Every structure is written in structure tokens, then in C-alpha cells.
Length: 96
Image 1 (cartoon, rainbow, N blue to C red):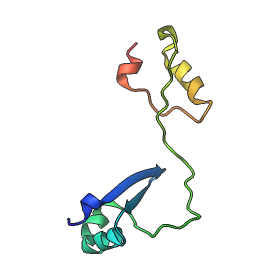
Image 2 (cartoon, rainbow, N blue to C red; image 1 turned 180 degrees about the vertical axis):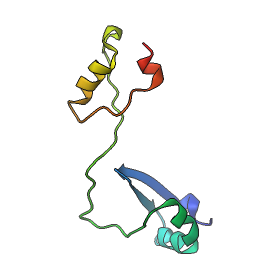
Image 3 (cartoon, one colour; image 1 turned 90 degrees about the vertical axis):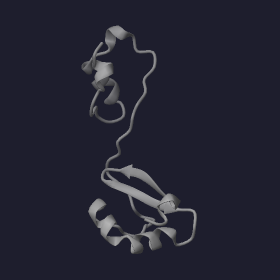
Image 4 (cartoon, rainbow, N blue to C red; image 1 turned 135 degrees about the vertical axis):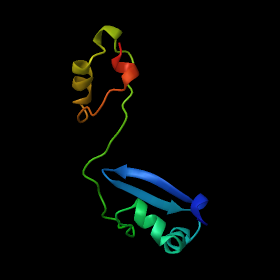
């Protein structure tokens, strides 16, 4: 598991993450030294390409100033529709 504390994992959207590191070659070396472990975590690991793009992204949207009387799924769906679609409302928010 050597090298893991030097690797940063960033969510890119859809089912993709970016593995990066500050040290030259640290990601490649860590991948090579831990092939079996990475095979259990990732379906595939491929080098970065500049033309890479994802079709979907998951984001958290914080909306301030919505009166409590409007806190319901219909209102949240209308707000989310401005940027995409509503996936889920957490239990503490939907309990109002």
C-alpha cells in the first residue's frame, strides 16, 4: 500500500474518478505495485486524455432563503429543474 498517501482521488462525474499525485510517476508506480487491489476497486484504470468528458455530474445544491412552508419535494424538484434533475432530498430536510 506504499504511495497511497501521495495519491489524490477526485470525482469527475458519472462513474469516473481522477487519480493524481504531486510526485512524478507516483500514480503509475502505485498502480503497478498494487494491481490486485486496484482491480477489486476499479473496473478499469486508463491514462488521462485531454479530450475526456463525462455526460453526467452529480452536485449538491444549497438553496438559501426558501421559506419553510415551501420545503417539499415539489418545490425542490422545481428548483433542481433549473440546473438538472432532483436525485434525493435528505431525511432531515424532508422531515419538515
